[in-house]
Length: 459
Image 1 (cartoon, rainbow, N blue to C red):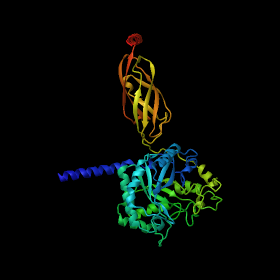
Image 2: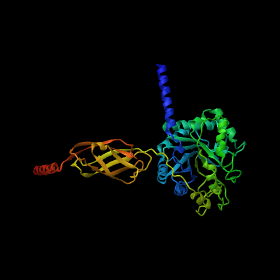
Image 3: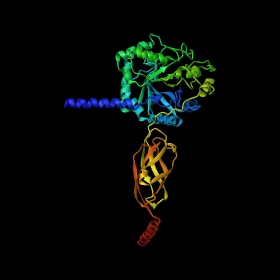
Image 4: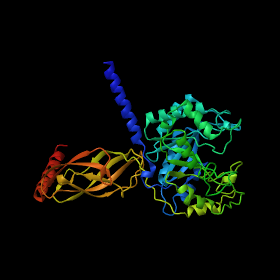
């Protein structure tokens, strides 16, 4: 009996693992717009969309931070809903809180709270991109100490718990400062990764992609076509490093930080333009979100794409003018037909109006160009002239349509489902109609009049 239960447990674990692998998707398997931007304030989303979704582009990326004291579901759902409307894909980096010049060390006891919060949100697309931490090879980013062993365990536990509540979480590790030396305040990335692997040998089985801070060093002023560590191609050096450390998994790359400092005049010539067309055109790169769209205070104002007068520097417009892809990320389309209102009796060949009360329980915004009502036409009843206003996730809406009665008299049962591009995605809802000949319609009308008359006499 114990062997049987053990075998069942193994099967369940296998199936769970298989589902986790199948749940997320490779973002390069669909048309992908790798242009993105890092923002500090969600009021900048419109400017971000104008930048990354320009010149033929759609569904670009935006990286932003949520701190531990900001876990307000209502607030962030509004942000996600706005990103859905603007066709922006969120990359969320979770953070603790600043304590002077250092960041509080993450607490294992707070992981469950983070998981509950992140899973409570209706995400914009199927892949839920979450970055765990930031440059932990800096002591100031980990409570004032360098502890690769602790970070590895934290990352592994966080990822495991995210995958339990939803296999759609696409877990990304913290981006590292590849140029940091070994010192009291920083740890060399090679050494840091080795220590992580020594503590948690399977740590890279618990992440789904690679986060890179591919800054052009030294001093954030390097070449826009550099190779190797500490360049705009740092990500390529990191992928090679992982192979030398024995990591067999191939990772897609998310460059969530990069960019050049400027003197306040924003003169960077063609650096971003050249990097996008050269180094960052690598097939392994999913997204590039340079740091940072708008930041007016030290020490990051030298990276800002917007000046203190609220105007963008020339390189913003250079990137805006670059040709982009029309991204087509996967979204979960789900819904329910709550009720149908259709006249039950009418003449053969007649056309009558119907109403469907529906609810959007998925991620995509429904519009009449993509979402429709699908009926089993083989029963003789057809649906036509479907019309409705856009229905957003979690909204209930009304779909108007016409019912085309059959050419032959009889009783008919028809089922309707919501469909996207002829693929059903909702429950099936049945309704009955009786198609009668015109003479029967007249008899029915006379009968109804007589019934109403006698009902009136009885009052």
